[in-house]
Image (cartoon, rainbow, N blue to C red; front, side):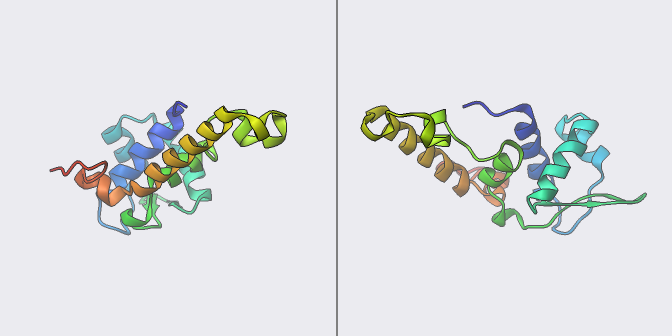
Length: 141
């Protein structure tokens, strides 16, 4: 599995905003410049994050984006899946009826376990921990 560019940009945008005081409205241009995200792309990503309840889009001259959840309430899994959809490693996990071998295929069990571990790891990586480098056993800054 490889993250699409939109998911990478979404993670960057949320990470930047997580470092700002909660409730702040951050202008699109500021996020775009600070995190090297094309402005038009950021607008599209923001709509997806809005649908997931992570972002609010504030209109007007002092508009921009605001996090609706605190950094400790937002996980990498939430952000990635808000842009990419639910993570699956292959078709037999995503559409069990697509594979007639799943009942006796030992590889299916490995894919299922790997998917579960990946989703669990991403769910534990919240943006407050990411800000301070406290994920994956690494204490930071």
